[in-house]
Length: 356
Image (cartoon, rainbow, N blue to C red; front, side, top):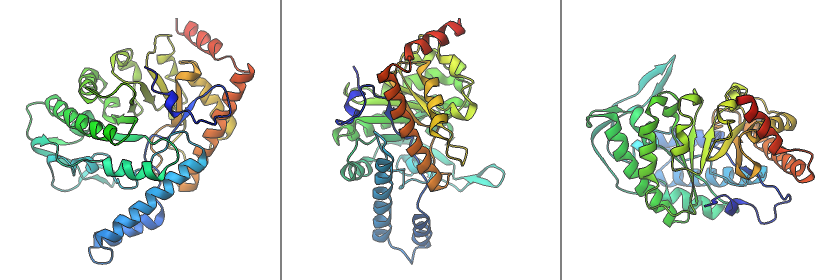
């Protein structure tokens, strides 16, 4: 089933449509970081004040995404600090025992699974409903995937990490079901750990099967995987029950685009076309060239564009500039396709023959 057409704006200016969105995280306003410090102080900002501050930040960033012209928006994950901790704090069976040094002077509050994991209260439903109410455009919901939640935790309760991942996948399914009931139609599963241990692609596949069990066909499910050796998980990802596979290639100058350009890539391609690791705004022309890389793999009606990854570590004006130029670039590409100035089928044919 085509899950993508529901996100095409009703007043879209071009006949062709390339979907634009962001991966998830976005720079927090400086005042929100200050408010967090005051709230954690325990005396200078109470829970109600903190809730008001995060609501204001979510409203601000959602509107910022819309102002940049994105077809599908998120709230920039204003309520989240770290992609594993946020969910571990909400899952029964997890506990925290202090930060762990990961590299240099950076620390991660790596959680431990001390007991069998269980689902209690919803994790993201309130967050989604708030954003959907604020937004005038469709809203995507990013969720850290069960494989990463398992891999980036200390396992003290399960015989194997895979067993833990499968139980977590069942919990993610419960959450996705509640999100769908609340109106969500675009779910993104984030599995950065897959890029570091790609030999476990079969475990991720089983987790995804559990996640999408009984999810309606009109719900778009994407899988985001950070930079890694994609040749180690392709063509196996063709068997994943997903609508869209989101890859980080701008940071690697598209050296791996040929991995997918064999003519057999089955899901839609979500392609990073701006580099989330570089604090410079790429020109519209540079981004257009990156979009053309995606057209070597899939036709325009199966291409989604976004930054490579979350933008939260960039200056906010740079993050906005990347989004704004990305939207301009993709609209210009659509117009070129409409006029016949760009032949996407020829790009795919050339790429496929070069791969032979």
